[in-house]
Length: 297
Image 1 (cartoon, rainbow, N blue to C red):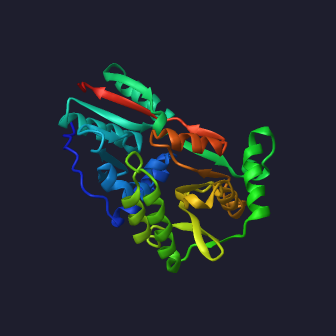
Image 2 (cartoon, rainbow, N blue to C red):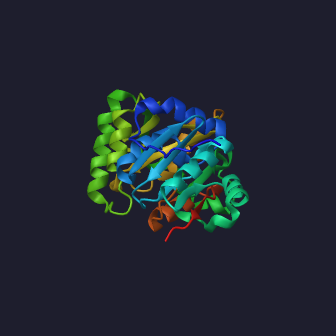
Image 3 (tube, one colour):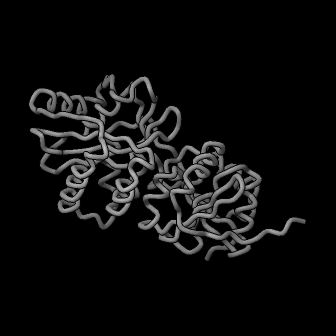
């Protein structure tokens, strides 16, 4: 009988990118939370650490609790081994970002030990259909059409792909945005600094928006799947007004023919952010669940 050893967790480094992305792609995991840029850039703020094994990786979620983890990502047999290893360390563990497919796996494999399973609304990704957003047809898009047309008629907004030499302007927008917002509930300053410091290494792509030669907004992201672009950061200056619909429209226009969807990631349980993302009329939001295996008092 194979002896299971405990999982050893460590910081997430750039050297992990190739293996993490290989395993994520092989497993068919679609949640943006498992993408390497998210794991790498958010590790300090979310208390993330990683255990990478053969055909499987597990992420510890220390910000939430000492027995909290992302559901292991990898081949099913390796996932079960990873869960069993965690149960050697604790009598019960709590998993986050459980997909529909992995929910079925958990129920089938640990049915009697699965104490609770509930939808995690705050961690569901919002996904935009590129063609539908560009068409802007129907009453549901009337508000979006209004603001996009208003920018076109009344503003002189210019946009261009972000180059490394433009990152100082992105930082300028970020600094001013932080000054104007209470970020206690959704602070992402350190995550953004990590993304910009490793912009080229992470294969990031973005758009910088200027008005009268002054930077007013930006979008930064990376390909998540062959058909999906993941938006990691999208911000504008408060005084720039409602140009966010226009910014997303331009992104979709530039991506048309290359991808079918834009993933706006989750809302982190922040009510204001949730209301804003729903205004973009997402095609769907990808359900994920929280589940407890074993005893977790």
